[in-house]
Image 1: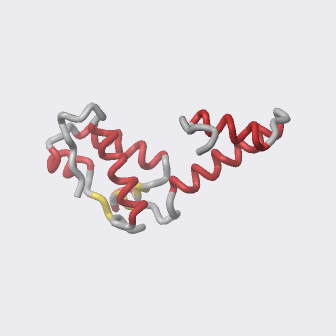
Image 2: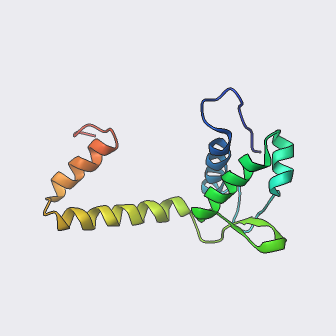
Image 3: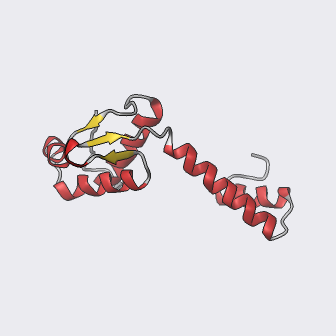
Length: 121
């Protein structure tokens, strides 16, 4: 299910990380699904173990996966981490905008600009 394109400008660990996040988000990887070991996945994909380990570390940091000691690595059961983190970022942004005295329209304007959207998007 996971594929790394060696000709891609995107680093292999990032390709893996992104694919796992998308698989979790789409439901292709359900909560509790056991993932291959770092060595096994590295061998299957023809990558260095350190590359897979880095992807796993970042996925664990983002609460997409969890390591259960000798039992292995699993898809975390805590729901869609992307949605949780996006909501937390939005809340922090809204709190800071209020502290700065921005109007909602001004705050949304800054958010649109940061996302590369036009004012009418």
